[in-house]
Image (cartoon, rainbow, N blue to C red; front, side, top):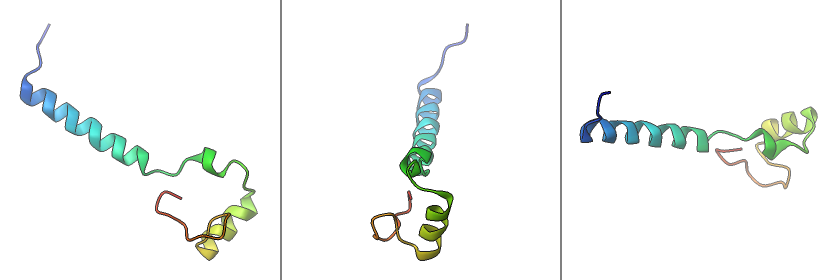
Length: 59
């Protein structure tokens, strides 16, 4: 059984942090669960969300 070095552990922690940041920035399908396909297209075309506010990067 191999042991991980402190440098290896830091590299893994950095990788996991980057993966989490990527995931956290992705839109969530659950966010749009009440929207119809036409609603999604309208939001995309207008740049505004369902509440009429500017779309965020996450949206």
